Length: 83
Image 1 (spheres, rainbow, N blue to C red):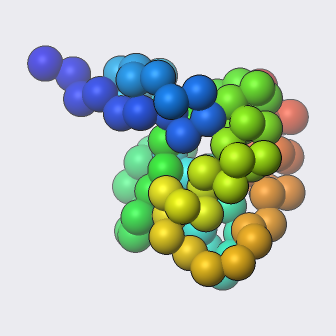
Image 2 (image 1 turned 60 degrees about the vertical axis):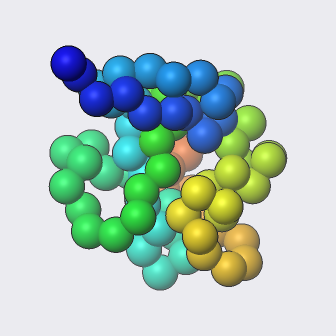
């Protein structure tokens, strides 16, 4: 049985293979495409809608349990290149 995760943007459950894992490194959101980086991760659909919703709801801050705002530029650049 394939692992299931919840998207922090739309809050729906989906197979892990269809979601993008995101980690916080030095207060910046970094996509973890291989899902192998250390630390706590948050899962999100690889769409602008889910990522924008998660950012506006501060879902990444809560899911990753980090204080203060996060720099989302690296994640948004990744979506532009691969989205």
